[in-house]
Amino acid sequence: MLAMVVMLSGCVTIDSVNQPSTATPGGSVDTSIKISLAYNTSGSYVSPALAVKIPNDWGVTSAYYTGTGGASGMSGYLTVNTSASNDIEAKNPSGGNYVWIGLSGAPRKVDITPAGGTVTVYLRVGTTRGNYKLNYSAGYYSGSWYWTDFDERPISVNTAPQAPGTPSGPATGATKTSYSYSATSTDPDGDSITYTFDWGDGTSGITGSVSSGSKGTTSKTWSSPGTYQVKAKAADSMGASSGWSPSLTVTISMPAGISVTSSQPGTEVYVDGILKGTAPNFVSDVTAGTHAVLCKKAGYDDFKKNVDVTGSGSVSVLCEMVKAGETPSGSNATVTAAASPTVTQTVTNGDKGPGIDYGTLGAAALVILIIAGILAYLWLKSDLRIIPKASSLAGDGVSTLPIKVQFANAFGRARTSGKNREVEIETTSGKIQKVVIPAGKEFAEAVLTSSTECGPVVITAKSGKQKASAKINFTCTEAGLSVEILPAEIPADGKSTAAVTVRIKDDAGRHITPLTERSINLTTTLGSVSTPAKIQPKSPSGTATLTSGTASGIATVKATMGAISGEGSATIGELARRFCMHCGATMSMEAHGCAKCGKTPPSDVDTKQCGTCGVVLPKIAKFCDKCGARQAAQ
Image (cartoon, rainbow, N blue to C red; front, side):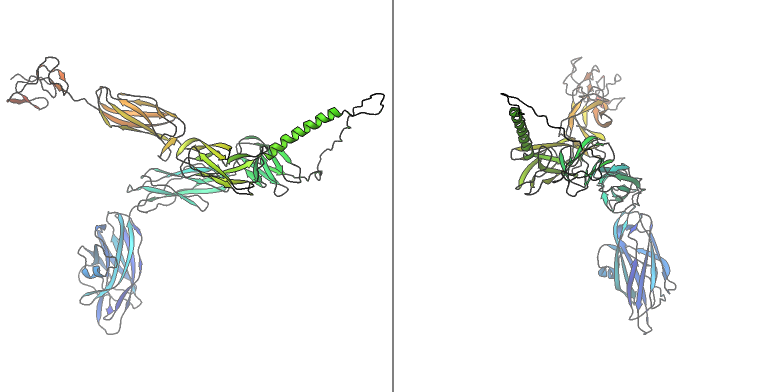
């Protein structure tokens, strides 16, 4: 044990332990322990000591120590002693199966100043990986060992994964749109890996666990435009992390849409006759093309404007609201005087005064009343409508999409509900719950959660007798095909079959379920396979049949669908057979006699050995029943 000078009534305490929390297999651990000594002036010396206890299976191969802080002669090699001291074990706060490391030979007396000294222990780590605890005990020797203070520190012996390369994924995009990013790393120990992504906006994302060398993928939706530095790091299953990868610069802009502002607060904004809320408002759920913008506010003239939206960027519209009956200030509007009305004069019975055709006026008034009635009906009548915030959603089983539920008239104006109105909502895929439009409100918002199915999805809403529907797409990246063949081995008899199951995989290796029919072409290197295999909507897989031929070997079945493919294999085994020992003709294993010569296999107490394959045969056999070789005459 390490010896230091202290008086008889001295007390040895551990002030601090500076130990790393990780170590590389086969590497080293440098631990500094500060020890304080308190003693009286009796003049009797004892031997202060330090013990470091480690687990038996850690595999330490060597150790030594040095001392500082006024110490003298405080250096040497440590002995790895596999029989733990009972005194140390009894006072170990955590217990366990330990060895202890102490000085070789007799204890040494070392001068240490009253302020204390620092002991540095150097341990050479073995190759055994794992999570361990190192225990430190401080005490002194006075005929026996006395342990007066203890400390325990965890340490993980493990090699961290390599830092990933620059993440892969889109370098440009729009707000409120989900994008997938991937990273790849290798763990020297072959541990499974999870990836953490720093999105550059103060948030992060973590992937599921994948095997070493495999790609980890997760998605991100930015809410604000800007330039973001996306980077990733890898962590193995034991908790060791790599450094950060180089950054991928991602530029996020506002999505294509229409930005509407107004000179008057509370102005209602309609696009293509559908109420989108009040200004200011950014309308993103529009496609490229021409759209009609209408701004309405009570007491003001309607503002109308047609705008052209391209595939990227946004169009700005300022609604200059003018009070009804007023001319816009500073406007260049041209006021055209109304033409004089045409008066029809009719002279009857010598009446020389002007006459009015009341029949014509009555017909015109009737037409006006009919039109006014139709407009009033359309204005007051409201229909149920559902408006998804986007036309697509990632089919990952966790992404969500808000859906506005409202009642609106034929002009797209939302109607305020006079009472609570419950709306039942269903979806052909994913999950969604019913909503209630509260009294006094124009709409409620439902939330659709995607499934792992991919393809067109129909959302249906119902309230009383009214119904509404909308369509979106659950999107997935179809990256490959998996092929499974069961049973894995069939005989080469020209009739045995095996079932071939084909599934579609995404870019993370997960199986996905299509919502539309998929047709997959199949080929095989041996035998024959039925093709194509059809994956029906909402079915996770398609099936086909592999039929053996008479040739034996490995049958590789390749599946192809557009640009993606996958393979699976099965063994077509050689058909078992034997040979007639009389004429050498081929016989099936279950045949009682030879179909060629009609004889049954001979029996004889005397035997011989086939010179070709070594099998034991009756002495009178002319051919080997195993290999068919002709036998020498006896």
